[in-house]
Amino acid sequence: MPTSSPSWDPQSYFNAWERSVDSWASLQEELINVERVSGGRRLVWRGVHDASYGLLSSAYRWLKSRDQKVPSEDRLRVLESRLLSVSREIWPDRGGSALETLAHIQHYGGPTRLIDVSHSVNVAVFFATEQKFDTNTHMPRDDVDGRLFAFQSDDRMIDLNSNWGSREIPWTNWGPKENGWETELPFIWDPPRALNERITAQHGAFLVGGVPSLPHGQNSRYRMPGAWERRNMKTMPAADVRKITSVSLFLKGLNRRTAENSQAAYTLRIAAKAKPEIRKKLLGERGLHHGSVYPDLYGLAEHGAHLAKLA
Image 1 (cartoon, rainbow, N blue to C red):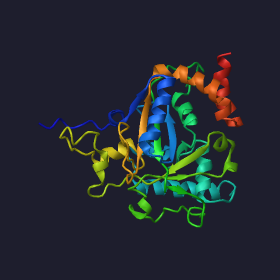
Image 2 (tube, one colour):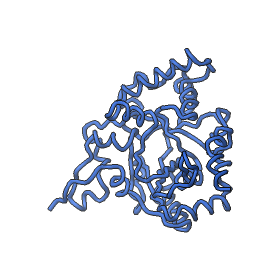
Image 3 (cartoon, rainbow, N blue to C red):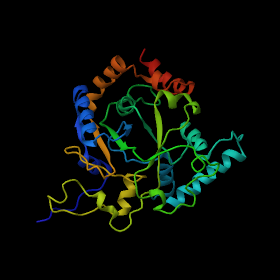
């Protein structure tokens, strides 16, 4: 008999596709496994300190909170067009492309559709295991499970050519399927290293993509793994897809090699209990700490008080 309908919250959906890490040694084993199942795909990585978080851009989260509903693609476009206009009318116009302006806004905490990723898995692991502090007491918070995402970057890399380097937002008039904007894995953009210090230190890049659009048949990718074997072919409703991710996802299982013709993304959960050991290893063997990952004065101001409290 078919099983009951699956739960579609971020925790249960991502859990269904993940493999778990409970030590530095198991982390290294799982990263080797990701490389194996991905079949040599180029990957970019995102680390989040709380495994229950959705894959949501800052603009998406901000609008979702303000409007009390998940934003549409049109709603995001209105926000970023206004941001771009204000940045050039009220603040000094620094020139450059629309993407570069959005990257500056993202860097200083403003709401954009850009999602930070890194070409360095070690940097992503740092973000997933980073010690968090209470903003008032500056004391360390208890660790919670973290998460790593890996995204296929083959054929999705962009540069600031005549289209992407425009002063205007390139996707303003795109339809859902144009360039796979709302239906395929997000694009990956490597911003100029000179944009700010953190980009170089973090081997930084951005995911750039539209709010997921699910034409007929497209939400089949949002089934739980093993759906066929369990005779539960329920797919995630489009409204629920947009609650957990602001870009299209193609999560694949980590127990077998991914088909060559498939776009792919993967996820690992890092247990809270493993974080202290992993932080120690990142510092001792990789030289990663708050000062190396956030090398600018903004990073010092943000983290200095927390770290000084521990002295």
